[in-house]
Length: 215
Ligand code: CO
Image (cartoon, rainbow, N blue to C red; front, side):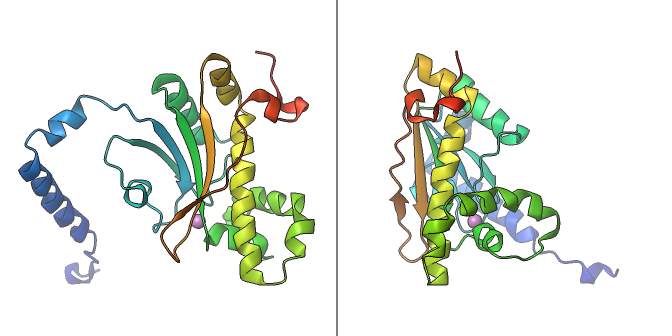
């Protein structure tokens, strides 16, 4: 490959970083020094990998305020070592007060899961959302408008993932000792606003008995 054929779009990011760092230092010469001292975030954000849903930007928060985990369609899978490690660290070490699952309308992962398309390796991941569909198929099948049905599955997926959080020992153990609030939110591109699904899972008794651990 000729050198001039190499795509250099990545340079935009490095230039952007230089400009951003200079601006930060201009406003506050101690900005990075302050960040280097450590983090004390109050929130863990479990969101979609979608490039249009950046946690800090859409919540008007700064570096250091939100601990973030993102995956396709913001799914909480009980065998996902990555998510469980993030959750454990956030709850046990950082002592976050809130864990937020934030989905978004128009989520590609949810839309694909609703179809019969073969998505290769991603089938295994999207399978989790198919299960959410099946669990709520009566309600979803009754929605004739396809986009409205997708939107509702986005909402139901968030609610299900909040319940999946509550089914972990990590969350149940935290509940024994202190308050830890779980939230299910959905972000929309039409107005840029977040809808609170008001998922009421605040204590172990909110779970079906089979999921409660003797701790
Ligand atoms: Co998405």
